[in-house]
Structures are given as structure tokens and as C-alpha cells.
Length: 102
Image (cartoon, rainbow, N blue to C red):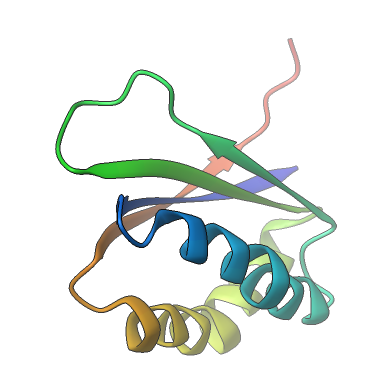
């Protein structure tokens, strides 16, 4: 399994609305692509005091091919929607993780 981890640090003044919008709009759009099989939303608790709150959104893909298709076709468009709504209020980075059997 492959996990795309997208970490956002959002300005605390926008945090509540951001999280609500992510849950009601952004995540459903990602899942509607049919490529991720599930997702998790996590909040970073060991936060550095920088005026923001940090959230990790993790999307599971059964195969690298499913991830590659999502990345090539959907990722930029969906991140552009976040940027249009929260420009100047967030920073983010995305990474790809592979699950390893213990």
C-alpha cells in the first residue's frame, strides 16, 4: 500500500473553517476520483508555536499506479482549489510513503 501524506500548516484564525472545508469539500473530491481507497486526518500535537496549526491528510492507494494516475491527473487541480481559498494562510508539503511489512 502507498500513502500520500499532505501536511498543511494553517493560520490559527482560519483553522476551524479550513478543517470544516477540507472535510466537507476537499476530501470528498479526492475520494471521488476513485483512486484512494481510504483516508485519515491527523493533527500534529507537538506543534512549534508559529501562529499555525498543523494537520496531516493521508490518502491510501492500493498500487503505485493508482497514485501515479492521481498525481498526474488530479493533484495539481485539487491543490489549486486549496490555494484559491486559503492563499497566504497556509504552507504545505506532500510526500509519498510505502507501507512495509513488519
